[in-house]
Length: 367
Image (cartoon, rainbow, N blue to C red; front, side):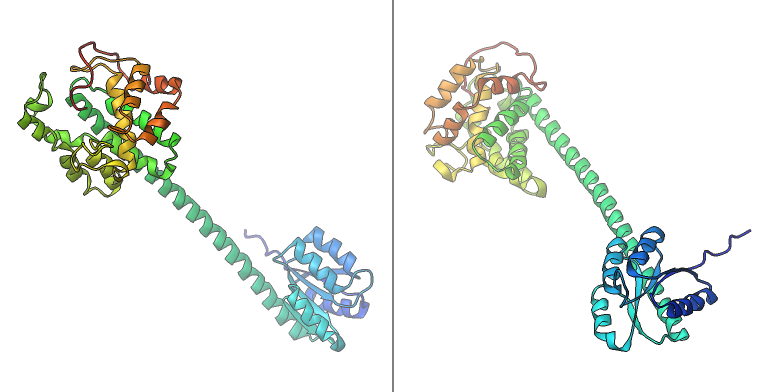
């Protein structure tokens, strides 16, 4: 069995007993549940307790007038439909009430049909306002949910990209025997150095991608050259030195990796202009490549490889300082020398670093 409909509720705030009684009779006869109050203060107490959807209030009343009641009631419930009842001489005040949030005003003497029509319209407008706000709230919630889902998807995609790039960097390290986890360590040194040197956080992702993929071009270098245990012949060096350009051509077509190109292409440039492939000098070398050069050399000197034996951190720092202005950007070197040894040790001994295989001599082959 269905429940009977809940009667509509109206509050009448009117100090004139005759008008108050007439209005009550009009609304009760039309199926409303009618509350009455004799002044604004009494009406505000009833309004606060019952929160009626519709209120009619006189303007001129003792204790608290209708305009003050209107403002206070609207502060309690901004959705309240409030109609002002006014005498002919108070039309200006009634218009002021509209500016304060009243839905409409009725001029005395009241007309039964006019009162009910105004009441219906006020309630319809209130319902529309509430439905619109609920719709906006629902829309905002759905947008928030969609944004959250999209953010999660983008983060997942970003994690996938990152994992793929790290796996590719690890694969490159594994192919170049003796450099296992080299890229991961150099990422740590490079990011620490970049932050200390003032590189904006927004540029660190491109730096990280460039470091992880700096030697991607070596996949195009024959194993007979890449893995040769002894010195390379001039023709072999010529082939080896094509790997930055091979790397650039591999990375450049991939939109989210384009920011890595300056490091991939220029990581063998030298401050004094004697590097390759472009022979860039000084600050014409991209800053990311200058930061990478110091971090990469430090890792190469402090980790055993088939063609070099590790030296101490202090010795490696002295060597980098000695090469300031030739191999390396002097400003980058100055920042690097300020990095705490404890930080470098943490990066060096991180979970990506394996045990060291022992072998031979310092930095004589490219890394």
